[in-house]
Image (cartoon, rainbow, N blue to C red; front, side, top):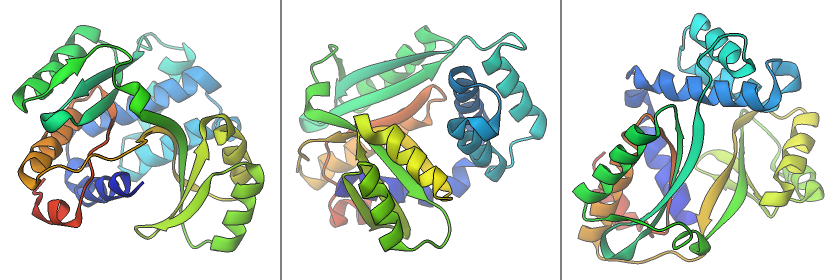
Length: 248
């Protein structure tokens, strides 16, 4: 999990800058739309929607934008036609990638992903050729001051794999099949989520030279700049040396 943790740290550090961009509202709006589409428009009965709305408010997304995204998701107004897709690819030195897409324009999304890989000496791969190198797991982080031992017990009893302190937060990792149960147990125990989602984690990390590692990190950065890209996973090992040398 170390590479994922370091990349998450980098993204958090640059989050204040990203929040200034109008396109962050596009991503947040789609998160809200999908949460409302899948679980209904009532925040009190839809934890995913509650979390998505909380993130939008934290980024100062206008109330009207939030309400419009919810209504699109529930079908009260038109415009909720978005699709979820998954692309697989390889970066320099054979680093494996999974790119999660949420878009209202499949052609635009594919063009932007192709361009990012091409620009950084990578390429798209056929479906299934990369995914076998990853496991999809639940990933939950908690807000505020919480007791580690109490969180550990609640999460473990519900089926979590691991609970760790990670970059100032408590992170809970779960098997895919146990994710909903762990999320519900923590919600019922009164904990507030900072993140709660399924993510792809590499079974093994790839160690490569610093120059090529930095090139891969620039590929990750460009992929994540696309409005349509929701998440990027790779099997790149992010050593302390590489992280220190990387400039977002």
